[in-house]
Image (cartoon, one colour):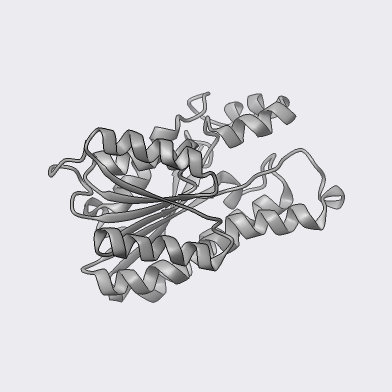
Length: 257
């Protein structure tokens, strides 16, 4: 599966939220592009299925079950990258949790805290654990954080999700500025409506949102997970060597039209 002609050949990459959707698509793509991948998510069985698929076709992959909201779990995944593959050169911090359709004043503290823990604290934990290892793994490192159209504007998503995804872009820009001269690039993806398990759950609970998400795009459709993964792979590769600190739309023209 992996190839010495791939744009990620020779790199070790960590991907969170890798058990399904965009993360699983990225795991397959990064491996196909030559990277050794460390996959993190909470669902061990799903992770193992993705790892088996990758290794069966000649790729290199290992699974670490854990919660990005727990710093120790993230540290374990980063340490696994070093122990199994010798370092860490790229990361796609993609784990997410979303709700929609409930007014702010009706949301519980638990939903607020869980939304912030996964979407924001998760990225914070990843950056804090990944950057020191990348500084040692050199030359150069690349990190991509998953934000959302909701990171630029209010959408049908819940207020805590909108707030968390705005904050992901802020963290991304701050980290890009701090580590640019030390060879680490940090970018974010502004992801539009994508056909994932999480999206299916949101739409199942609130069917009207599907037409709303589609109507906002120029292409009048949702993305396939692989389309978002392609953008992440490019930003993690040396082909984007002069790109850092950006929030790159992968949204079918939603924020650009």
